[in-house]
Length: 289
Length: 272
Image (cartoon, rainbow over all chains, first blue to last red; front, side, top):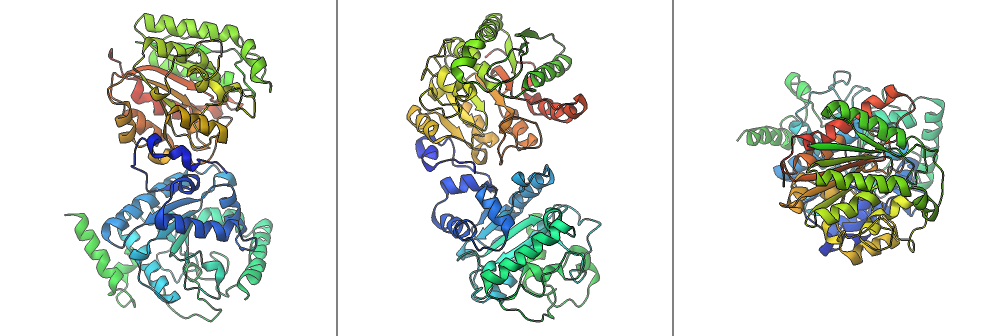
């Protein structure tokens, strides 16, 4: 892991206090304070210090100092715009990925407790989906042609800035599914979809990797892996895997997320008139003023 | 007017292909700038040796580079030194310190290069360059650079002992997260600017370098930083550690990146 020690960045040596939205793990480890430090420590303790955390790729990433971080202070439009800028930067660096796992950066988006008011898993998930919807409304790049608009398609994926991404929603309300609890702050763990497919896709090595992770989930969570965990494009809905229920159960719910295209063609979607849709309209209006 | 000064002698190289990288970079700049470079040293194979051996071995190449840099400044030109390793700066930086005592040095590098014989674990000369130029140890090629003239840009992989030295000396640091164009512009102010680039400062995968580490600059980020440096303040440029791929066709993309990144610095300069 590359290191920038805390005292290297002591006040007298820091040239500026202006920092980029997207921050590297070594930088966060050296400089984070307040709730940023808490959020970082929570992630670090779970991924690095607990041998049993099921996702071996995440464990590898934190061991090598590869995580990227974005900290979201609030729930306002400026917070979302700032998050969108950071996510664009993440997409940019991920687009130029050289194929080496040593530069495969997962992104942790940590939200301040001021940004969210939730107690139950479902409430956190609703916030997570609203956030994705708002990011979509701020996205100035077209939805990739090869990705369906409709989350009920097995080939659907969240996309941002033209890149399909996988968004894991972790929150402190998870009791049974500990693998989706990365501490007291709500977090989105985001990876480029393509990279997921490369390391755990439908190849012998990928199948072994997935089997290993699911065995580890059984140990870590004390329950078998969620029945909605499947293989992208084959046997499961992707969006279910973003926001797993706390206990294994049959799910019949519908995805709150609507792409621009599906919004223009769907008259009766269950969430079209809710908070996310009205925010979306408001954000676009504000953008032009 | 620019003057191109090229190192072709081994200066503590531990891996092959950086001498070739300097050659390819120089040829590209000759074409781009329409000038002829001055080449110094004779290529030799890389080897892993201690600084106590590699420094005397590089004596002649370093002396030639230093004389060429001094002559270039004397002639009111802006030297561009293209080097295989950062160790070549043992020659250039004391001359910078002498001729431009008010200059700011932007050391654009993933590493601090601030070790001394007492702190180096690897014995690699390239990791001791800045400390030598600042007089923390005697390289035999001069000193005089003040630590407060130095700003590390993009540094993110620094040894513990080296860190302590940097802290004691007061070298300023802009990690990648803080190295915004505005921050760099503010840091240089109106001073003459000398820029050293080790390509390991980049995000891996764009410009091959032997000691690259994660979380570096994308090409457009570094270009934007250089765009922020006011025209006319540049008094010297150093490019080092491009590890040339085995085929010239594979070099095209990284060379294109290099040219694109430094292009904002290559506008006709004004005298500071």
